[in-house]
Image (cartoon, rainbow, N blue to C red; front, side):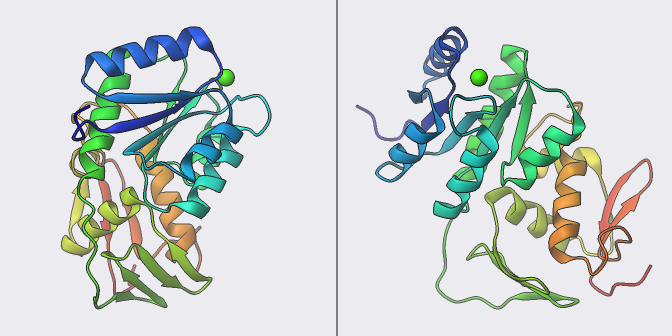
Length: 236
Ligand code: CA
């Protein structure tokens, strides 16, 4: 069994959909483990490591959001893609607030699904821990990109793989306006024409972590019609 194949965990109770997803991921050369409930997924995660977790929201027993929060207690970094049947904006925000890195609304196209999976797998191979590092400071925050941790006014938090990639991009281009498509390409690995609100919801999450007043952001600024700009000096 070739070890280099990324190992994916699929949590999905609809057998028909699960079979289709497994088949297509295997066609792309991935190894997939399929479980039908969140409880089973959490049990598997005690013993196995995965490059990506694909998680349905509507599950028997524990729902996908709760599963996601529990996964994050064990592993702050593993990329999580949520599959939601509900198209409401509230659900996406709940998903991302639970620690997911992206979501797809059912029904989704196979090509869109595979694009997201490939993008997320590319990112997870970036992880390279280093023993000592200096934090990046702004406001009351200190961010440790290599160890995936941050100190904020609200306490210490673990960062996900995507949060680290996004923060790294912002820090690198401090003071510059970064167009949406550049962020989507760099952080999510998506083609520039991808239509998604994931980015905006992610910014909401970063503001909750790091802004003194998330409703009036000073560090993570919106540049209307273009994208976002990070400023460490907190001037408007
Ligand atoms: Ca379901």
